[in-house]
Length: 474
Ligand code: ACM
Ligand code: ZN
Image 1 (cartoon, rainbow, N blue to C red):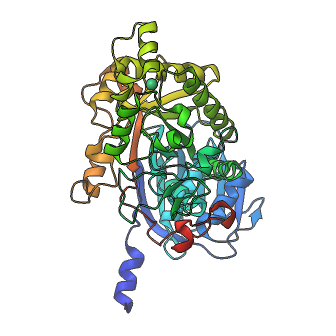
Image 2: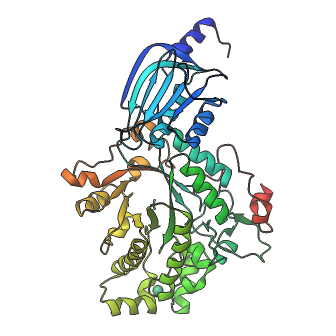
Image 3: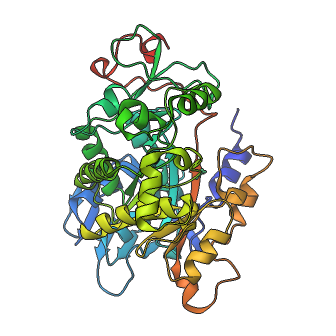
């Protein structure tokens, strides 16, 4: 496009789009000109925060100890965590906050203000309304790899989202290395290529010796630790999700001892009808299943410092439990009246275990069925009712209803305007119940998203790909 004098003038004078819109924005006259020699004066900010500023503006920004024409990053008392103040005039840019997280968000706003080196004079004061500003990525159905994940975290941070809910396991594949159980990734990370279209059936994990064409990938623990650090440097907490006891086909295929014990004809019919290698749910009746997930959670907690650990809990098909002798014997022994109570019992084991390590369990709203574990927080997805019920019972909730927050749905059904219109606190909540709403979250499930927009990530090292990996062929 040819830029005429007039359009250049219009471009230069348009106020920049700030997303999310800060609480207070006042535009003043004039602007600050950024150059390669603009200095930065740190008044208490960390060296990491200075690095983030250089990154955000793509300028070297040498450090100076004083002066008056510069970018000032000043830490001082009096503001909430993540709150900041940003003042721009023709001489200086001044960001102040009480924490480095606050400075970081001032820097993200500055990034959005930067229009070809000109920062419009303004005064902005901002603080988030919610502590949980989440975005989920499902890497089980499709796998994107570490380079894409860093970009995802960058985009989250630039838009002041602070909670990355990483859906690392599901029927379609297990993506986290667990040293105690290497089969989870040797077998469970590599499914038989289904074709471009995701298929809820046709889930087979033939194992490393197979000549079948495989699709998958996983994160070694060293990579996970590096990503956790990368996220922390951008004020993003990663909440890992290890699905149980449903959406667990990849785990059940890797570790058949996790499966229910059923009459052979019942299992054969189930597998034939579902056209898959293993049931999608594991057996909560076996003590060994409970132990298995505690050992998995040990490694999860060692890598992810997040207070909350997500254990899934959604859409569990409990019909097989009704026919499993371990499940039935557990139910009889504990006097559980139905399979919902059996799931609830299983979730309570995980809740108590996480609590004993100083962590907190969060799960999808189905964990309310059969009774909610004492310390559990609920992620409301099937609507807002689960969130309302949990908050009224005194539990923390994160709101992520399909009506507004499922970003994989068609644009027709959830346009941007609908997302923007979302109010995370349901009108049904009053008084202190309203404080139980930690915030909201957008979800990106990837059944229909086989690749990132720019194509498949190519940063997966060859050593991680078994023979026949579909990524090699791509
Ligand atoms: C979900 O979308 N099944 C949580
Ligand atoms: Zn069972």
